[in-house]
Image (cartoon, rainbow, N blue to C red; front, side, top):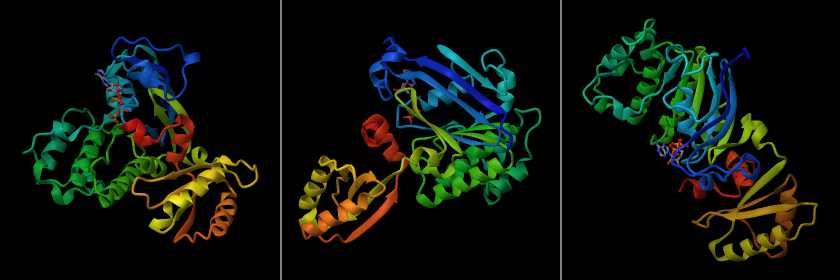
Length: 335
Ligand SMILES: Nc1ncnc2c1ncn2[C@@H]1O[C@H](COP(=O)(O)OP(=O)(O)OP(=O)(O)O)[C@@H](O)[C@H]1O
């Protein structure tokens, strides 16, 4: 894989409304809502052949960022380069290099898959082979199917095909698995990897942590219009910490929870418990802590004669990283 930058974004800024932004030195990650909506300070570099993720909760500024990259909006500050071109100064060069996934509502209900591909191919001087695209994206059997008769997964694959029909060097895919069932999501992920294998660099916008972990070579996490973390998924989650998930009988839940919370409050610096969470359904308790957190949890449960139905140690997830960085859960931010 070559490492020449395909997309470069430096200190990008786009404010909506007229609330003044706090100066950078007084702002902190996650403070974006107080600063006003928009993009406050986003920087990243995408290398050729990467699947690069822009991950963040609803309203974080992801779509605004990629619209600035595509030249669909004008920045208030910072710079964008796509293959060395400024999208505002050289819009044609950027349009030629970039394929942007369309929202499905922008297609007419009665257009067939093949017609849509032919129509979009006609916009470009050197379009891709539409027959090949149909096969790559597993749409050959649907070539004569009207848009409104396609399944959710087929519509998403068509939107990817349309983003690729101009033979772009870079494809921007925005929230491409929203609304799909688990099987269709996994199939779409496979297609995205297949597209990358054809040499297309991918800028993937998502609010799904699992999607970013599964697909992205590297990513930035955005919150409140600012980058709060950057790296490979493995780098981001490799904090040396562990999460223990356990279940106890319903009648024991509150007692077990109180006991584990007490452990978190007692910092013995040996088998440290840093946080305890439970979901609203109360079925599972999550205990976060050091690599040896299990040595703390199990003896404490045993001493209280609490026998868990299920205990698992799971690696940290991007969700855990997000909570660490912002002090809020993903759901709290997105709601
Ligand atoms: N044209 C606009 N005018 C005013 N505010 C806007 C405009 N577009 C977006 N915003 C606001 O800017 C913030 C960032 O929006 P953006 O769509 O970039 O976020 P996002 O991370 O893509 O979120 P989502 O996943 O919900 O699409 C949000 O608070 C949004 O309400």
